Length: 226
Image (cartoon, rainbow, N blue to C red; front, side, top):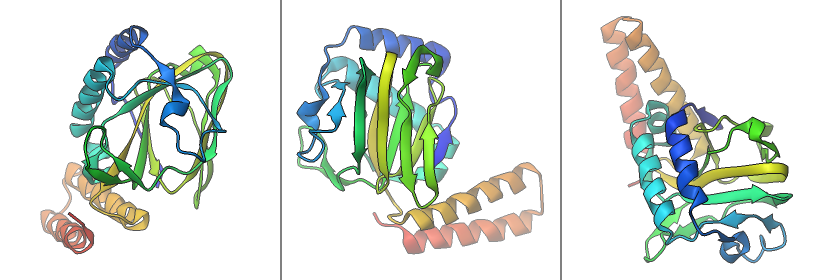
């Protein structure tokens, strides 16, 4: 399931975030790459102990907490602290699949990566290239969103970032362990939840909405992992 989230950050918040990232100290992205990714990863990244990165990461998570589509689509159980990358000067990241298990920096806490998320922090017209290409059962998708928007997609997907030939592409990226391990089951629950919300907004039969809500929560109860 590939879902886009509009306006996770406002334009003013994107400008403030970009200003903070301008002052940050970036390192070679290869320092955090696994052995298979070393040859295909060419970008810059903020260290996990970056003050700017930690502050921006906390802010992005707070914004997502209030985003109804995110909550409906992700059903998040655990979230890895957001990280930040920069692509410029033909920087790219070749085809890869994200590691299944990641550690929370500075701890022994493990997170299973069910969902990957990218929050775009540069306007698409400010750089050339830099498309996020995602390949999965739904085919190949090319994603290049407005600054402040985000995309959620299964971490099982093969994906890449095409070379940025002009300008600079800033983004935040991180992973989510969902209450629902199966992408197929998450899609069913998302579609059901969206239908319930639409019926409620349209003031349809309260009894039928209650029944559908019961189906949703009973499926969630049956499928969820805590």
